[in-house]
Each structure stands twice: as C-alpha cells, then as structure tokens.
Image (cartoon, rainbow, N blue to C red; front, side):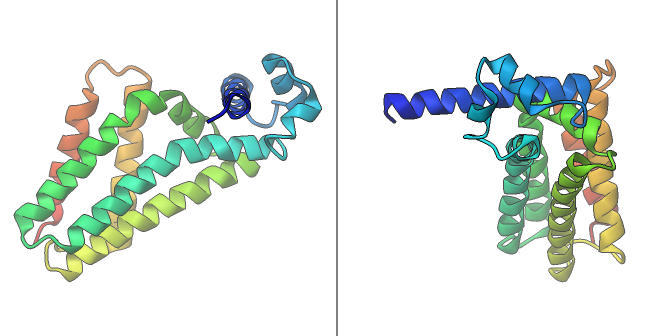
Length: 201
C-alpha cells in the first residue's frame, strides 16, 4: 500500500471513529455530517469522498460489528454439515461460543451502538434490524440442519433460534454495563452448553 492509500485509509478510520463517538453520545438522528467532518478536521465535501451520507457511515460501522459475527455463524453452519456425531455437534457449538466471545473487547464500542440504535424507528434502527435478521436467519439455518441430521430435537426452530439470539444479546448487555457477576467467556460457553443440552436429540 502506497503513501496515498495509507493516508486515505487513515482518514477513513478517523471519520469512522469520529462518527462512532458522535453516534454514541448524541444518537444517529442528532449527529450531522458537518460536525463529524469538523471533529476530524476536514471539509464537509471531503467527507462525501468517503461516504454518501451519515447513513453510509453508520452502515460501515455496522459492517465492522456484524460481519465478524456472521462469518463465525457461517463457519459454524459449514462445520456442522460434516459433523458425524452428537459430540461433534456439541463441540462445534462450544467452539462457536468461544469464537463469538473473543470478538467482545475489540467490538465493545460498536456493541454499545447496537443497543443505542436497535430500537430506533429511524433508518439507523432499520440497518441494525436488517443485520439482526440475517443473524437470526443463520441461527435458524444452523438449528434446522442439525435437526435434519437428528442431532437436536426441536419442533419450532424459529422460536428456539430467537431465544438463543435474544439470550446472547442480553448477556452482551450485562457484560457491557459491567455486571460483576458475569464472566463473559464462561457465560458464552455456559449458554451454548445449556441450550444444546436442552435441545439435543
């Protein structure tokens, strides 16, 4: 990567961090392109060389948060297709929980953004819900394929997948607000083990 490319990427990163900070402090609706650009020390026109508008910036931040989670779930779905036993299925679920838990520290500010905007009725909330719908769909697919392999006993895959995603979201919030009773890594593994035990065939 040449000097120009490095400078461009550094500026893009600075815009993202300034936008994230403003979205967290004031919310998406109150933030403005002008003030984000000012925080970075660039002109408003320069901002538009990187993002179409503040929603484009918000979508880029969401990509940073949700894409690694989606990748873990996709990898889990792929691994489960070749699992030959219940024990292998359980190991893959535990491995998935461990991988998701390791994402936590690096993604913490972005996770706070998720909780700030997830219930919003505006465009930011729509972006979050679109990503969450994708995550829920992957969770449902994982459980459906496991059921088809007789690895788990589930009648209503959709409801169980929503319960798993919802429980993971609630545990994430407890960790973010500093719940002293919660150990993040242990909680991820415990949640996976409890759900698997409850639904195994």
